[in-house]
Length: 73
Image 1 (cartoon, rainbow, N blue to C red):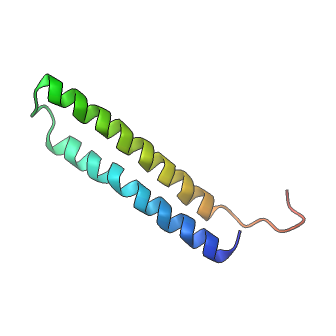
Image 2: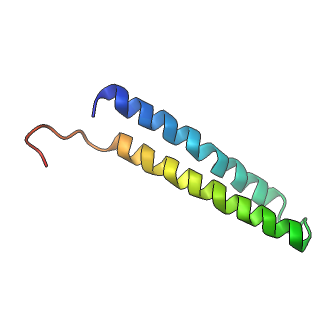
Image 3: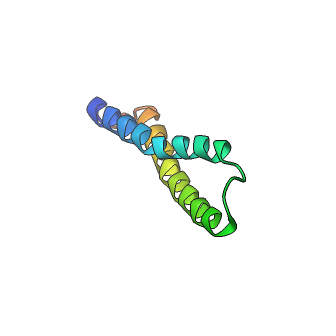
């Protein structure tokens, strides 16, 4: 993978991690402040943002992996 490809993966990974970070902050700030119906919708939304953040973390880890040469496998 080229250096440019690594940078693109890192940037995309960080961008994808932002919704999960913001969601975590909101979750901590609004703990127990909503009703049951609204809270279940919010929890489903949080799960979705954490999945997106996990995909971003995977991209960051791939981008930071050591470069393999042509003889390495």
